[in-house]
Amino acid sequence: MSAIVDAVRSALGEAVLGADAGFGSTTLDVAPARWADAARAARDAGATYFDMLAAYDLEADGFAVVAHLSRPDAADHLLLRTRVDRDAPQVPTLVEVYAGAAWHEREAHEMLGVSFAGHEPLAPLLLDPSAPATPLRKDVLLVARPSTPWPGDKDPADSTGRPRRRTPPPGVPADRPREGA
Amino acid sequence: MTGRPARARGVIGLVEERCTVCMLCVRECPDWCIDIDSHVETLPPDEEHRRPRSVNVLDGFAIDYALCMYCGICVEVCPFDALHWAPTATYAESSAAALVHGRDRLGAWEADVVDQPPLDARAVVVDPGPRAR
Image 1 (cartoon, rainbow over the protein chains, first blue to last red):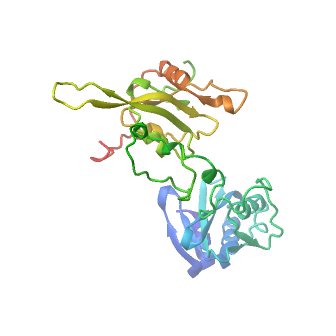
Image 2 (image 1 turned 120 degrees about the vertical axis):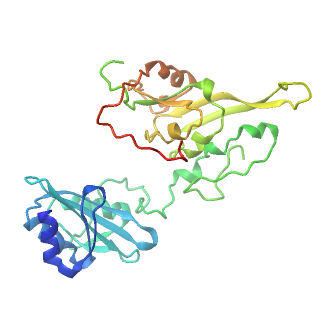
Image 3 (image 1 turned 90 degrees about the vertical axis):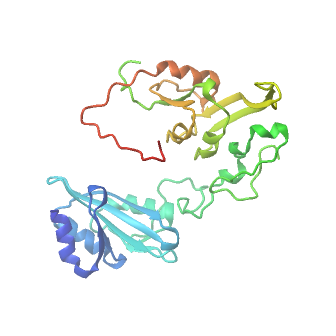
């Protein structure tokens, strides 16, 4: 159905760990070691347009790295995905295959701390130097959260003195400052 | 409002009379941009031999549009449709602090809401299921 998907499957064989056809796109899961090989096979099959690369946090399961590659002349496209461990999140760089991947890899490194072997140095791209390291990791606490009183702490019943159990918002430590405290 | 689709999601407005100060929108808001001030008033009972009634009275309702990311969760969660989308887009200010819009601005946007046109013949209407109904 998709020439690009077939090309990557035949080039990688058993190294394609799985496929997902959700939302009308095919996502192929590959091992991190074959990441660049998979992208090269897709490019050689005509997927000359590197759309984007992004990483996201799977918590205990590490990080996923996804790239969207497409073939503009045939409306054919592929999502390529790999998963890396949390302790050593590293995948081979795609810069050799698609030069445009450089910015995306710098962003993924800056936001989540995923590194790309063969692409050094991964210079910061967007964040202010004062920003916390790897802010898109789910275990990084937003600085503004503990220091800002949560407006949801307010309760109309407070003026009558009735105590009320409140559910703290996500991402906020239990010892945060309370409204009126 | 001309030139904007009827269902345009420009800004979130408030119909004050419908707000019961339940605080659901404030607590659901992912970026904490809604702030409600309120107090409780005790009203005489409806009938004789009943207890006096406690009513929440809204003192202040503000949305900080410098923080709002227009996710619409507050509109979805409001049990009495006090919050609504309006197609308005002209509420820019020259400073971020001035983007905190209070009751007067939020209430005025109801006038911009236009009647929704009938759904397109090809529209797919999804049944939300018994829990959502």
